[in-house]
Length: 152
Image (cartoon, rainbow, N blue to C red; front, side, top):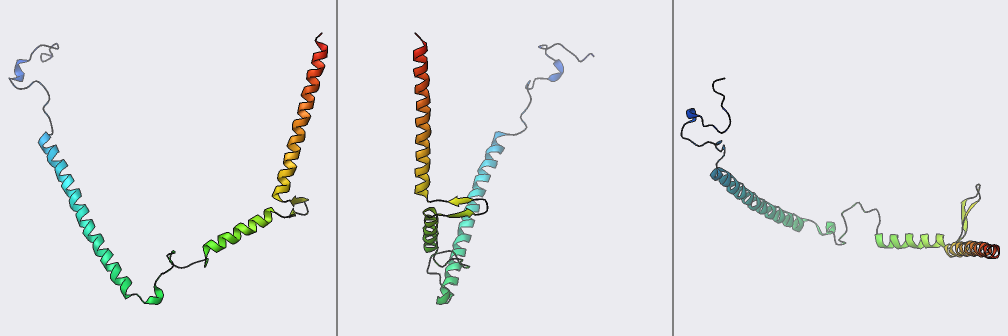
């Protein structure tokens, strides 16, 4: 335990060197690594750019050699096309949906569930809402009238 000393007391065996922990990495090496990494990124991007230009040229040559009957002039995705004209099919779907909303029909005949036109359903719900509101207003008015007589 001879080598133990209180804090703040200099140890003569340490010598005249710095009294702190030396750095394990030098700033110069860190900067060189960062510069090298940046250069590598630039080189990779340049090489990839040249490769993509080569692929683009190869694709243009392949498309030029392709027979005319295989040219895609519609601008849609390549086959298989499940719908000849998707816009027309969508318009037909909207029309059929609109017709279903505007007609009477059975949803489940055994359970007695029917479908009514949308406008008729809105009318029924509106009337029901109005009747409920009027009934609650009449009840409130009756309560207020009954309380008004009981106060004097």
